Length: 351
Image 1 (cartoon, rainbow, N blue to C red):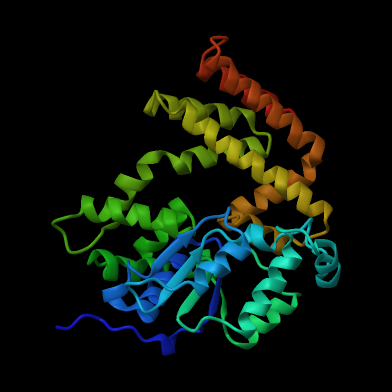
Image 2: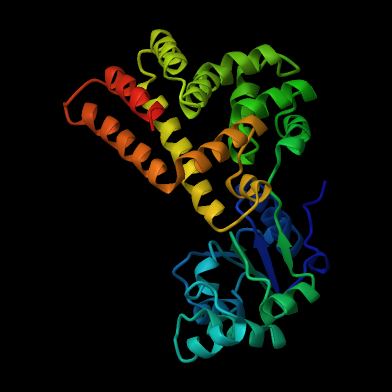
């Protein structure tokens, strides 16, 4: 079988923008671009990766300079957000005017890239990987018209199970039923990177089996006590100190090293509440906040939003300060984790 050949006709050259936080999907898209534009033979030789510190002028100079050993070059800038971020993203006209003459200004960078698009190097493909993107600029309109920009959609609770089933088959040669996949989503959440990491462990755990079973998921993934920790957090969220203390005691009896796992989960929960308070003050809807914070499942999302409204910013800050004190005590020799967390539970339930 011959090696794969490049097919630059499949690539929206000369510039391609990938927008989104999903690292796995970004890697898949980039791999396809590399294969189509460079081909298997020249994939490594013609590939150049630049980081966040690269200037737009240096990036474009790299695109215009073709190497000796490859007829084409793919230049990746990851992350590229800093190139296009300017003091809170003013309007396009204001940003362009304010950034004029400023070497790192977002407006000037957009202008330089627009000019490059008018006279690009046909032997180069520039790929910009961004977590966010301003759709109100001339640059966006120009790229969108040429179909040179792609927004990478994150998984949702609704479609994560189907993705897991396909991923298990194609990447790990394992069968995975949809109910079992949904159970894994329930335990881990709709994050491709975390789900893929769990799949890799489960595939190894079930090395001699054709399928990943529900029992394997509960044994390997459920062993982290994640559901019990979130039950504890839910009890604290409604001020049920008695149930929270009982759940906390059960966790410690099952695992004497669970303390820092609990603290980490509670820190994450309080951060979600704090951010939900801020978004509520911006008059965002519950659905918008749920999507923005990637809250799941539905009941947990409802609990976070309810607590954000009940506590407000003052209550959320108070709870965060209490947890910080609880975490610092055992680390500085001023107490033990288990009784410190018990005191925290009583205090936070009283807010």
